[in-house]
Image (tube, rainbow, N blue to C red):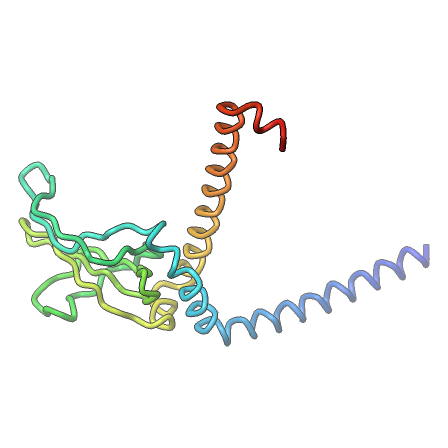
Length: 179
């Protein structure tokens, strides 16, 4: 019984040591989270032309809610988070913000995309923000969403490559037998 108790005490001590180490490392990561997020954005930026979308810059809305005469931002973006809208837009204090999103553009910069609607025209303003601003305003959601977007894109690429290989094996069964 003494061996079991000694083993349990040793196990408990190791758990406490790991908890202290985890806490210390977590604090270390938190002190460098802005740098980490900025680096993640720079790494992801070259993929955004493939995985991003063109976001609405301006459009008119008809009585059925359909948009027409639309214009889009020139650079593709991925949406990383949403927050409660600011009271007004920095470019025009008379425009109320209806929706506000954190996005990463293909230029590797973070923006707050602020949408306004006056009953007829929907338009947006892309307010450039720093990685620190993004984390302060949106929490860790943008960091997680950036990771998730890249993870999902990789999985989709792997599935596509596997499917294309199967198609080629079906179309050219003799050549696949040689491999």
